[in-house]
Amino acid sequence: MHFFTIHATPDPESEHAETAGGAYANCWIDFKQRDGAEVLARYYIEESDWIPDTIEEEDWVEEADYADDPEVLSYFQEAKEDGMCIVFHVYPIGEEEEDEEDNGEEWEEE
Image (cartoon, rainbow, N blue to C red; front, side):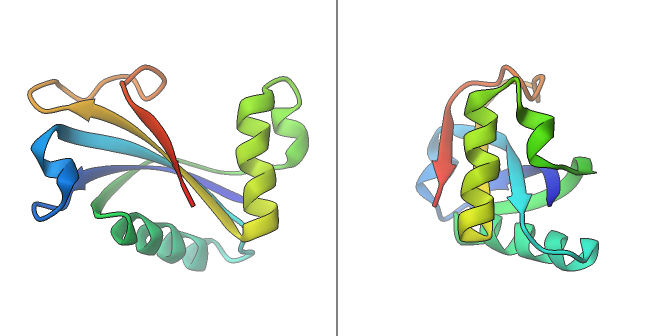
């Protein structure tokens, strides 16, 4: 499965634009070809009212990679079941882009 962390900014017309400076979207995409997986990740980010920007990280991941992290394992398993899982890590307006592990609000896109 492909994993991407993609930096995104809020769509100016969205409710996110009022409070969010940006977000890091962790995307698990169950699609074999890398280019197609990226297209899908960007599509689902846009569907969530965000504008995808740069890829900060990408990797091919397996279930065993998350054996020690039950929360992240659940995201991987959701992507296996549904084809994708995206978790946004949002930071507020006025703050610099932070470390992706510690940047405020988190929610899962279904």
